[in-house]
Length: 150
Image (cartoon, rainbow, N blue to C red; front, side):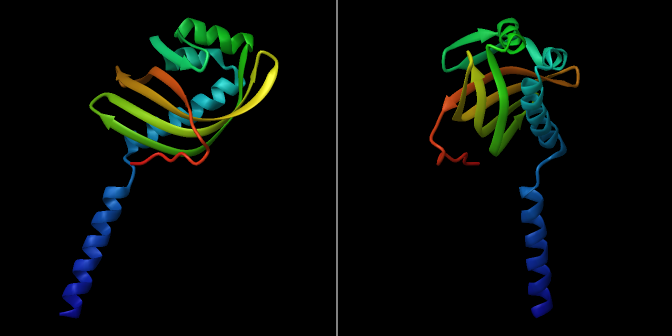
């Protein structure tokens, strides 16, 4: 009987850990999101141009704009995303759409002033021809105690 219970518990544990694991597609999107922060910091316009959907929207504290405007802002340095300290990440994929939530402390230089702000950033990606494209990026100001619930 002990052996049977032990085997049942083992299978239960393995099953739960498999459910909790992140799929390879989720890992791919999370890595792309992390790379995006590096590319924004480095002002890597060619990589960002490839990533951003041509009709993407970007929602900031000071306004909402399109891909060409976001790329112009990054390239000019009017907003320099110096460092995104990612504290928490969650992702959900439904069909060919992925939503990523990152809780971050963003250190940025905005019009000549360094600022550090707590955000939850919502990113929406769509897979087109086997390539993920960023459709939307929204910064939501939050307290540093804010948590992303799965």
